[in-house]
Length: 122
Image (cartoon, rainbow, N blue to C red):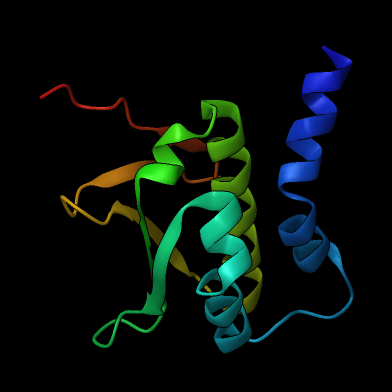
């Protein structure tokens, strides 16, 4: 059990460190980090951008690599992204969508607790 918790903590380290640190990154820095190669490789992020009509909304599109991650890791990453965004953008909203379908793959409770959507069978 300790090993599992250690892995979960490591999964969100980059994001929670950002949210908890004295320096809060700008919204543009968060978008750039989520849109980078590391996020693509480690979390399956295909793209990240602010919504043009609602700038407090961060839209993260994820691909098959996201779905392949254990649910606990996806939850840890989603929570860390939500926390970082909320620190950078007052009343910020995060949407994590499947790049192929446009469907939400994570919903958030009011306190930021993520709920991972069950994969739809075809």
